[in-house]
Length: 307
Length: 292
Image (cartoon, rainbow over all chains, first blue to last red; front, top):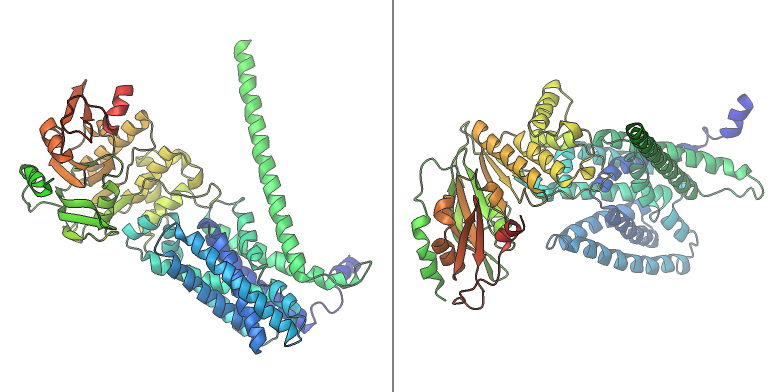
């Protein structure tokens, strides 16, 4: 048992500073992403979430170019992107998807330019990998308090607007009739979404941050019908999968044949997908079995009646 | 055509402003993109009264409802809401036609009803026995107990309608507004919902204002009809409004009103030729009756 544990948590896992930082920041980010993600699923805005991630890419690559902190770049751009979407989208209800698409296309184009300059002019070949796919073991300890404060602020914001946001997500007019300031509440939600996506960008990368936002939420809504419980479970699942990903990545340096080490981002996303698949298949099977039982009961009745 | 004279023809049907009105819509006009959607609409709703906002698709019913809700700014006229039963500003309960939610959205019918109680308040709700009891009571009142714990996105149109009505009622409104509550329902469910609404209006003194393109299920319960056509309205009791002369003036050409077995059939003549004696189009009020 001891040797198995020793195998799972290999020497230095808990004592390494980089791992500790990765576990703290990764966990905190997963909580925010899980909680905000449930509202993203509720509002059917996963496309907006992904677009903010793409906008964040531009910010991260731009920050790299000027030597600023990538987290700052991610956050400034995701928040600005959220504001732009709100402004462009307000005129027409159905224009929202189009507006989002336009912001997305432009921002990815600019990222391509920035990343090109990052790698050629500044000769920092790791920039593309770091921005797009994250580098959770390279997070500096000075980032920890920033990430913690931002997470606490966005979680507090979600708790404060919880009921009006839920009502506005059901139907904007219903909420307005009840006296909810729908635009303001929607803007608060978009800001928390921008922060969640910006924070995930430093852990599993800007491109993959949607996976952490949508994955746990989409998984838990299959097993619970309660919005509050869904948020709690999504946060827990996100933390669990992130930590598991970090652990596996740490262990992967001893995996045969190459002993190269696997990227955390891949492992986290793979785990998220696996969790989703397991829940999807098992709930699907459950429904199928119930239907079978029901059909058998019905056909059984028919036989009895006939007999 | 001289719109002013025709509008003035409808004047006898306008009641003078009265002290007891809960809602008074006074000369409301709405122009959207240069088009006149509503032109000088006037009507009043008194406490406990059942009012039907009748008109075919595109007549401006939803726009008028949005003006009353304060979601749409009128380009002219005013909407006044009197004080409610408890002396405060009257509260409005709103029931949209349908809410668009994916089937797997984690939100139960009872959550939607609970949001009607305190959805406008900040923070999360602490579970309390009083809150649960109120929600349960309201779900039972609209006969929705059976699917109280089902996901809202998985409910049928009629089931969702009941949940949305419970959501609106649990906040103790003085005025209940419903947008096409009968549109997605079969005839049986439509009669059930109408019965439910008229009982609520009578027993709890809540004024009900609903839009519909089919008025027959509402005929037995409507205290007042606001008939919208061509952006204008004729208002009064059904006997006053649903007549050939009044509707002809409203539509600005000949309209026949046929009464068959307690049902009303409105037959609108050819739009291109007002002198055409043979009605060539039957509008949506009549068509389903012919089929029935």
